[in-house]
Image (cartoon, rainbow, N blue to C red; front, side):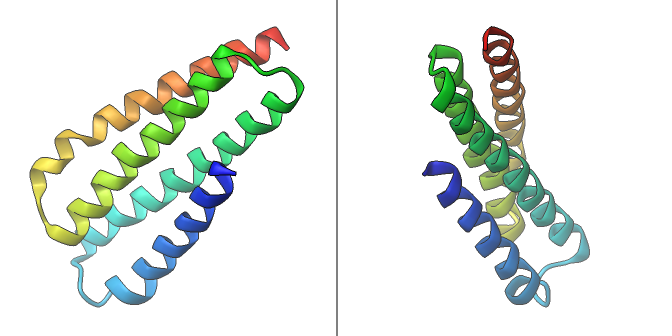
Length: 116
């Protein structure tokens, strides 16, 4: 359910960026925003995969993979969205924390899949 909501949000923020923000952002900030949308989509799809795996073999690795992928979306994509819209550059310091969450989430998904 969380993955479905995050995917709906990804479509919404993507459309908002393409139709509402494009005329107001520099090309550089638009690229930042697009990167946020792209990673948001990838990792929400990954979260959907976690949910499918959890139907077959729930476990702690899958639970934490889902938590970390969700956290990564909030930190990585969220910081890029806010940075692009507001121009607040120091938010770029938050983005790598989201990236680390993504990496850890994928590693835990690997470990969970290895056990299935």
